[in-house]
Amino acid sequence: MKNATWKRWFRPVLDLCFNSNCPLCQRSTAQEVCLDCERQLQQCRWTDLQPLAEGWPVLAWGRYDGALRRAIATLKYNNTPQLARPLGQWLGQRWQTYAASVALPALTVVPIPMHPDKQKSRGFNQAELIAEAFCQHTHLPLEREGLLRVRATEAQFGLSAGARADNLANAFAVGEVLLNRRSPKSILLVDDIYTTGATAHSAAQTLRRAGIRVYGMVVVARTMRQEG
Image (cartoon, rainbow, N blue to C red; front, top):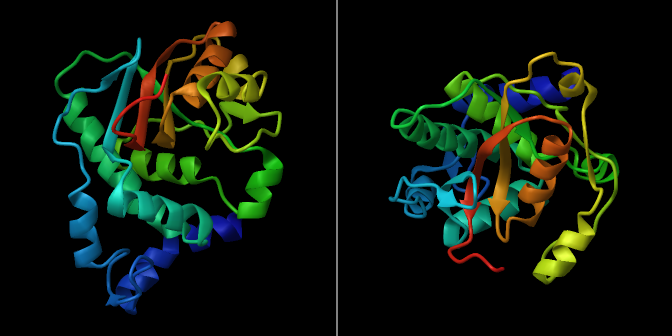
């Protein structure tokens, strides 16, 4: 675990000293992504700072489309965890702009967890890596195991709204670190993508059943139209 953490955070430092290839286009770059790919990603950024109203604020950095959609897929499926760092930092910048305009409770950041078997297969949880970079930028406290994925679920893609909810039933549990707190802070959930909101609401419901307040959620990308 320590070795994996060292590689994750020191690889960008080494890449700055020794040019590597951009994981999105394979051109040589001294950055985590090349300037051209960063420009394309920035074009996916939402200009509206208002969070999505879902009964709680859901703040997204960008649209789940085009270059940003490809970047998230590359992060998750092409073994490029270093992409989580710039995405998490940009999300942190968006959060700080939002936070300057509202009154906020004390918050603890909790990433949406993966089932241990799936995380072992992939090698990392992209939501956790995004949350790490987000917290480095915002200085909010991070609780990596605030939520646990206790039941393996099917991929949500292609499922109806009802099937998504059924798929996630009893999938999460509250981690002991939150259960044992005498006065836990409100929770800010972090994930890579927000589509129908089924995953977010299932996670929030699990926390609330344990008496833990959930403030809202931040995500790198959300779909342009919510489905059900």
